[in-house]
Amino acid sequence: MRPKKITAPERAWWCAEWLESARHGGLKTRLQRGKILAKEGRVQEVLLEAGLLQAEIRMSPLIKYRPTIQWPVLSDSKRDKVLEELEKKPHVLAQLLNGQLNLEWKEIFESVGMELFPKELAELTIDCSCGDPQHLCTHLAALYHIAADEFERNPAGWLVFRGIPTESWQKALPMMSENGMETVEEFTVQGFREGEKLTALPVNQNSPLNLLQNLGPFPLWQGQGKGPAEGLKKFYLTVARVEEEELQGKDRSY
Image (cartoon, rainbow, N blue to C red; front, side, top):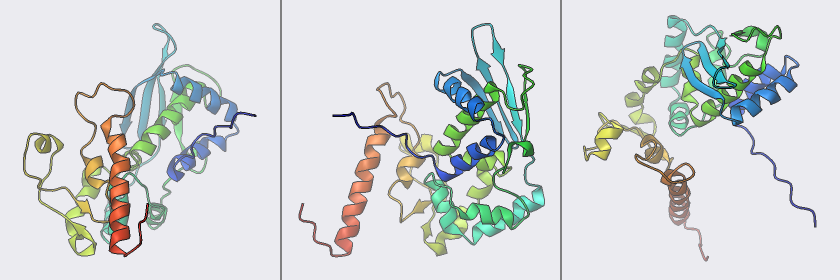
């Protein structure tokens, strides 16, 4: 009996679009080599700022390269227009809080004459200290993959790269109480862990994972994997499903 083939999980759509812009350059081999470097843990000191991605690629203790990716960000006026649109779309921000990038982000950016993702590599300004004459060296490809991993874990990071800092879209959250969101005044993860009363955590009533994700990584965790939060995620989703079925009057004979 042949062993069952294990397929890699599909990328989130926004990560797939990011990687696709490099594939358009006909550099699939370079991308694959960069993916290997990323998996080997050679990408260090990643810097993510508005319009800037940078890292150090350590090939050996003495050989290091610094790839850089740049892309023009939203102007102040266009960013303000994007934020105005977001106030009309509370569900888009609710999904962002839960680690999902709604497809409507593309429409929002297009409404101000900007693209959410590059269509091809030529739109970006890329450079690497290795001096490789190829447009995309393996070190840049490694940064591309590490960035995709980070954006998949935290899609708000992509918005930072495009010029929308987290605090700017978070300011729209208190305005959404009439649109299916409950808000409170002030919240800090550290304060919560120290027993402080919850005060500004936006709670999306339709998402059981909102509170869990806002707590962030568990402190002092030394076990394997991603920590207790990963196991709790399944529990939260199961409880939410059971509650929803009870509210809908479904028969749960299992």
